[in-house]
Amino acid sequence: MDKYSDEMSFDEWRAAISSLTKLASPLAIDFTGGEPTIHPHFLEIVEYCRSKRVDWFMTTNGSTLSKTRFVERLVATHPLKIDVSVDSGSSIVHDNARGVAGSLARIEYGLRHLVSEQERAGHRFPIRIKVTVHRLNAHELTPVVRWAEAVGATSVDFNPVGGLWRKEQMEHLSIRDSDLDELNSEIHKLIHMKSEGAPIETSNERLLGMVDHFSGTTEFGTAPCRDPVRNFIIKACGDVTTCGCSPPIGNVREQPARQIWRGKAARSARVKSLGCSLTVAKAKGASSCMAQKTIGDDLRRALLIIGFGSRRAH
Image (cartoon, rainbow, N blue to C red):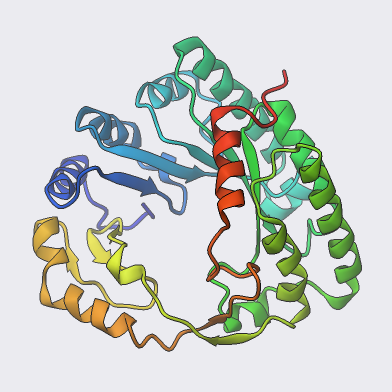
C-alpha cells in the first residue's frame, strides 16, 4: 500500500477485496508497503476484511502502535499475525539504521501496548519481530532476541539484507569482509540460544547461510519461479502484478479479480515463469530463499505460535 498520487479510495479497496472473495476462499491478505498503517483508511480496510471473513496480516515498522484507539480497533479485527520490523534491541543501532531518534523506544511502547490490548480483548495472535541483518547490526544480533522476549513478542526471524537474494542486490548491500568474523560469532550464539529455547524462528541452516550470503561464496544460478501461480499483488494504484519482474496483469479498478487472474496477461506470466532466467542464490542445504523449511522448522514455528516456546515477559 505504497503512497501514490492516484492511490485507490476506501470504496475502491473495498470493491477489490469483495472481488477477491469471489476468486479464492478461504482468502488471506498480506498488507505490506512502504508502511501500510499510514494509509488514511487502513483500519476501515481491515475492518472490512473482518466483516467479509477475510483473514489478514501485515508487516509494519510499529510507528502507529502507540495510538490507543488504533490498537484497540486493530486487535478487534483479529489479524492472523503482525510482523514488526526491528533492526536491533539497542536504540543506538536501531535508531541509527532508521535515521529516526527515539524510534526503538516508540516501537517498544507500542508493542507493549499491543500485547496488553491482546490480553484485555482476549484475542491472541503471533507478533513476530523481523530483523534484517546488515552492516550496522551484524555485530550484535543476540540482544534483539532478549529484547523481543521482554516486550512480549512471539518469535524473532532473521533475514539478510538483499531481499530476493538477487546477485545485483548482493553487490550493493553487502557486509564488509572485516565484519564477517563478528557476524559468524553472532550466528553461532543465536543457534546456541535457539537450542536452549529462545524464540528464534529462523532455521539453523538459514542462519549459517548468511555468512555465505555476505562473504560472496553463495552459488548463483537460475531457478524456477512460482510467484505467478500463487501471487495476486495489488499496488496502491490498483495495478495487479504477480512478482517484481513482470508488468501488471490488470487493474482492480477496471476488472474483477477473477477476470484478471484468468486473463491472457496472467496466463502469459505463468507460462513465462516456467523458463524464468532470474539469477538468484541457489539452494545450498537450506541456506537460501529457494529452499523449503524442514518439517522440524515448521513444527518449531507452530509451537512458538501456539505458545509452547518462550512466552511473554513483562
